[in-house]
Length: 59
Image (cartoon, rainbow, N blue to C red; front, top):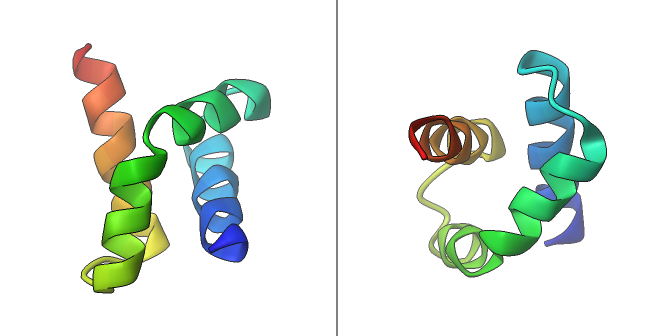
């Protein structure tokens, strides 16, 4: 799970140029959702990262 969340952090910080510390805070906030998706194996780390960014861009 740690590798999965690290992939999400790396993807968001690289492709959306968001500060890594901010991305870590976002991942911490969305931890329950990420964990559910990881367990269900419904989405890749990149897909989840895109969903999280779209959520935060709207808010």
